[in-house]
Length: 384
Image 1: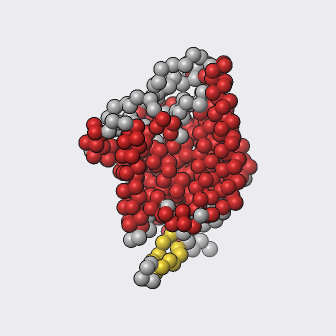
Image 2: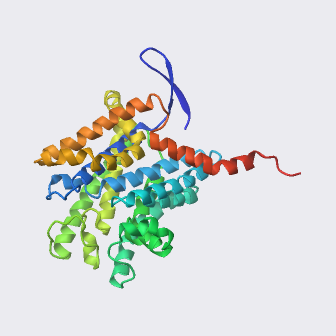
């Protein structure tokens, strides 16, 4: 993106990247939701509570915003913009595989696939992206239900399917990414929806307000319809489970339960993601004082990959010392917010010195190195 010159309190010029702060704020909220989800699961699963309302919502929001980022990065059709997007995939894949050795639920391998797909489809018309999103979000859960009914796919994948074992079992790896783990047959719908959104206005207050006014009521209606359909047509309610049974019957697609891979979950999660994004865009554009107060969280959103990677270290170290002292829902939430805010302040300080977050810098430099041969070839004069 273009560089702009801002002023510090001492009027010293500082180079910063011009970013869409509403999108970065939405990324920060996705990271908070993800952190709340994970603290409720590590080291032991907590009883069902209101905090689980974010379960299965933050990841779709993060994927949608990744799609927005791909559209923004390729919208101006700069040289090698698509190559730079695709060149990030190997890094994301390898880091995701490495994390999978220690923890479960890592989504970076799917992001690698999404970026490659995004680089291949970013030139499609905006209407085509909308259609693709609808097909994956609506048809994806139904196709997977059919495949489970006929034993064409396992109910659950395992983290080893998308780990380093993939180098020796490429078919299992393909199945894990496309139809099992974070099944691309559904999750690409969130990504294409983000790409569609990124082709439009994602910075003005009017655009944010319009998006929120459409998506928020639609989400309420979709949740209501899903609740009614699940109670009327679905199977009897089951005890709370972090890993809900994936749909084996058509009637199970009414549920809106997080990570259920159902039609109801896919649609409601997409609408919630759009509503949150619209609200963040509107807040930043229409409320200057609120926008200034949100600067640390905007910085966190700009370094969301670093937050994602470092929060695993936090969960495996400091969180294990804190968690035994937390006894209520409120203390669990406050603990997550406290770490989130500390990281936000650290990210703000970091970005005053550097253009990108630490892992964002590694990702960017790695993509530059991978695309360097193509850049050199483009600079060489053509043979007469």
